[in-house]
Image (cartoon, rainbow over the protein chains, first blue to last red):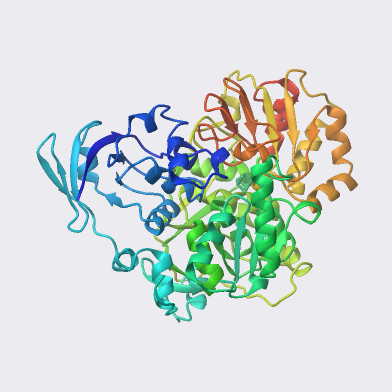
Length: 166
Length: 416
Ligand code: SF4
């Protein structure tokens, strides 16, 4: 169960906005998290409390293939991203590194910046506690579900190749 | 099926694939660069396999922050060099290199009909050769390095048809900026953009690379062109292995067809902070600039430098403007030198750099300060892309960039 406050943005939030390339040589998620969103929202990382939620409208994560984009979001303490649509490389990257993404037009249209949400990832139920409203996420395709339940792409591949436990 | 679907089907060992279907494909080449290969190597090591699927099909290109701009980068490149050596990978840096999307086609590493994945969003550039190529993150690339396979969802294909005759100084960059201006930065989300029409038939290979390169800027998974005489001329002298040519079936139905008459379009300028904010050059008004960048995987090829040199010939760059010219590869650099282009740039007062991504990604060689304005032939004008988040980036073709360097403000090449 996820519970946190919403930090709401608009359309086409790009990867240079999420994490500038000048930090591409950092690898620690926490360090990357300190610079998350700094190009477009200077105080973002200071404002975020552990478990908070990023919300945006369409095409979230467009631009570069940098995997440090979802890593920095996770490192900043964000528990999930809700949007009307995601850019495709960002979608793959987030699933691969275990940052939950939720597609729900309803939730985005009916939630304001600062609202508190409670989300059940397994059922896809999104509850807006501030407004007392419930929305449902668009379910993942079966294959993506399989990836997530395997524990991500690396674990999925290890299973496919029949490589034993860690 | 469309060209893209046929390539995907062939690499999934299927006779047919449909948009939306999840498939597992075999890849012909896997690429990563100095900023993305590090995570790919870490993830590769986690898989627990001790060799890459085929060392001749895995390539690392050091291009973003090279020649190494600081100690952190130098250490990163050092460890990638060691990994590449240990696994006998193709590894390009320094004298034999350049920007990945310029050198891979040049070296004949990508050929028509190939399926290529790279840990870089502009991997879609190779669609100009009639290949299906797409960008992914480092973890996906690690799995492709280990297994030679990766999962994909078959994208629908949108057909773009361009009619008419292009005006002088209007090229591939303007066609793609114009298109993105029309459909928006998510106008082709998850799709393949297939570029066709009589205008495309006449377009040079370099202009086709520019267009395929920016398919990602419309949200596309790939951009693709059919193989014609021009493609074959480009490929024949470079290919060291057989390749396959695919064509879209006559009866194929596309998810969408967009037709444009481009006879009257002018050079296009994308205003800050999105490639979709396009305007024709005659409507930009008075925009003073501090810096000009001519280069990148979008416009760092020989035709691009020729256009810029033609404009700059016997002219002087405005004294308050820094004009940085970056050939996309050593091959481009050498050819530009032989043709006398480099001399023209220097005489005009431009800086010529060794091939690198450099300022395109705010790395080095021309990072922007706050409140500076830059006109650039690169592909993204996002906030903070080239340095300070308070800087402004305008995207344009090389002729417009060069003309602007002379006058110190955004200028139509017809006016210099
Ligand atoms: S030139 Fe720019 S867009 Fe192209 S690969 Fe380098 S950083 Fe990326």
